[in-house]
Length: 353
Image 1 (cartoon, rainbow, N blue to C red):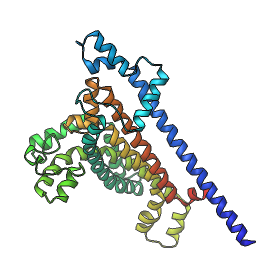
Image 2 (image 1 turned 90 degrees about the horizontal axis):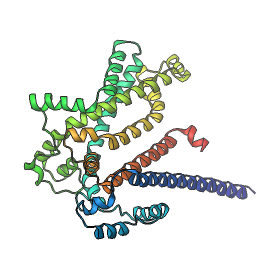
Image 3 (image 1 turned 135 degrees about the vertical axis):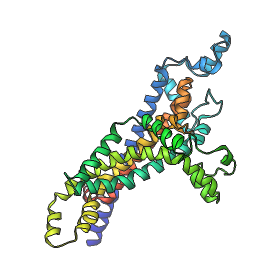
Image 4 (image 1 turned 90 degrees about the vertical axis):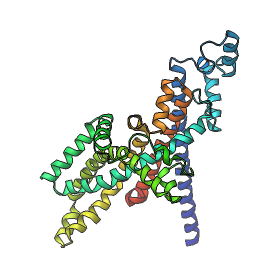
């Protein structure tokens, strides 16, 4: 009898797990479908003739008509969307009018630069932002709290391009502490064999430490500025979460029992505050991956943001839409990852699900 109940319980648990997985897949599919629909409509709404972008302004009328038919622009809008959907699913984003290469090759070439810059930036923002937020919450209302809040306010409000230009003027032009715009000096460019596309990692794996130092000198200033921007958001949210945790009854009980204050703050309170912080850090990382266009422009960083900007200025809509789809997919993936980590870290959510 008990074996029957155990088998029934396992079957019910598997059924619930399958149902949750199906709902998750359906949500992801609908999200990507909506993203594809938006990018498709953007490509049709912008005042750019895709035929002229391919053949140029001086092509004869016969060539224009032939390319118009090849692109499927004579078909109904729903049929064009279906063709667009089929190409995207197979990884065919078309060819860039600017570089004359497949969009996937261009994205594979420029995306590692953005990934490297965003990763170093989020590491700086997280390593500095969380301790500052905890310190500010513990010293609420004191001078330290006011200083951290002012730093966060400046990081929120100061334009990133202005900070970038100021940083180049001070630390590159005047003091000479860092390298200038670009990702690596031309003298070191051919000393590294690209493997991952992440120059810091590639140079370290190959033992090219001089090239590693040069790459680090180039990346540290833009990464520090983006990290400061992330630190402002992370420190403010950490302070808010910690103030909420320090006001809970379990903290009062721990103090009454004589638990050391450092353990209450850095073990008990921060561990509970870390659950929502996972989402904050993940969203900050996603914002860095999609929102570093101005920074890449100021520092001549050959990343995805600069690629999309140059393509948009040249009316290369295939490249713009391909980059937009990648950013949207990354944003969805990071949101799903943060939700998964939230579920794993919080036992209350696990019990509800």
